[in-house]
Length: 98
Image (cartoon, rainbow, N blue to C red; front, side, top):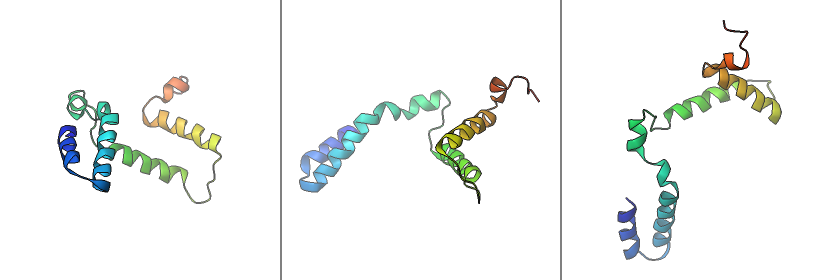
């Protein structure tokens, strides 16, 4: 894809060329994170749906009516909730194996 964009960049001028150059830079900078074939082989999710769903769930939990959090309290509760969701609660509280 980068090669195709470079060919396109060569025939463009002005702001269009700048826009394509910016996208080429972005793709080069992040290409190690865009190896979807390798990620799929490792069983990793390739879409953003799982992350978007998790963010939505956290927002619903932390933005309920009447709830206000300090940054420290928000981060601490987020860490606890993440341990619970990932089935790792026992690592923090081994006595609570129920």
